[in-house]
Length: 244
Image (tube, one colour):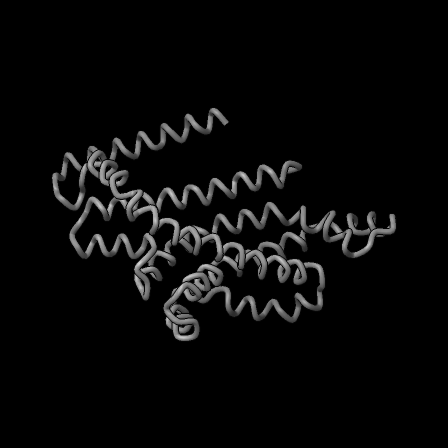
């Protein structure tokens, strides 16, 4: 843990030093000094930046929760029940490759410009990765493990709780990591429509007002949100997958 903290501090120091050097070389308002940006960041954090961050965090958390509720059961059933997998796989293969941002107009027409459409876009990005990952993880479990439990009198519920879910959990967390980067990017885009709250709205509003200090403050907050979410997934993996 101490080593990770040292690596994190070193990485931040390198990024900030590079940013500061670029601001000195270019000397343009579009690339302000990190010192000025951090000062502005803490100045506006309690009044408005924090509020926008909470809205974005809520949308990300809701999207992740719904993706898990929908994707994990479908992936488990596709991997364990061969007939269900045979029928549902073509549907997943047809929908998965579609760029989800292309569905944004449809989602907004169906769900409106409010919270539902923003959360739905996050779900569309993450849920298919969870489904495919869980299905493949379940299919990769040796059949001999099932036979051992069945011979001891285990029911289907025991097989899911003792073998399938623990075996697929690390893959679920990995798929969430992969999907979150794209999900946050799309959230930034959706927050420019039909809302006055969210980091995406805050950054674009600051850009339109040519307030580069606030714009960069929003970008810093967006990176902090992403880091916090990824760190939370790492903590969850450490707690839930101690056997790994």
